[in-house]
View 1 (tube, rainbow, N blue to C red):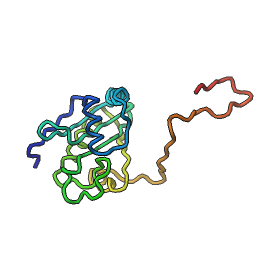
View 2 (cartoon, rainbow, N blue to C red):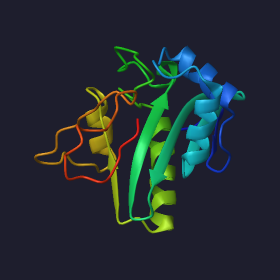
View 3 (cartoon, rainbow, N blue to C red):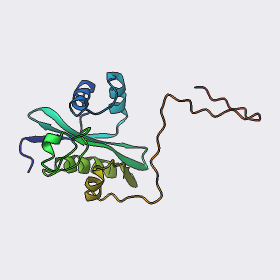
View 4 (spheres, one colour):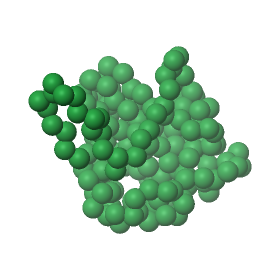
Length: 167
C-alpha cells in the first residue's frame, strides 16, 4: 500500500525543507524561514511522508493540552491519485493510496496520547470528504472567520478603561 513511502512522526521538518515543499505545491504561505521555524517549534507533532527521501506530504497537530487541532494535512497531488483535480496548495482532494490518511491518523493518535479531549480541523472545499472519511463531522452554527494579523486588535479605548492596548 505504501510502496517507497517512508513515514516519520517524531522529527520536525527543517524550515528550508518546509519552504521547498510549500513552493512545489504552490501553497501561498510565508517565505520567511524564521517564521516557518517558529511554526515548527510551536507545533506539538508532525507526521511526514517521503518518497525517495523527498518530502511529499505533511500533517501537523497543535494543542493547548485540552483541545487539539489537525492544523494541516498536505500531500503532493502526484501521490493523491486520479481523483485529484484542482491540485491546489497540496490540499487533499483524493487519497487513493491512503498516504494523507496515514499522516492524519498519526497526528490524531499523538494528540489523543497527549490527552486532548477534542480534535478539530478546518476543511476547504474538496478537503471536506477527506476529513469526513477520517471521522470529522461538520459543526453546526460554526462560522470560520479570519482577520489580517497586521491590523491592531485594539478597539477605541473607553473613557473609564485603565487598560491600554498597544499595537
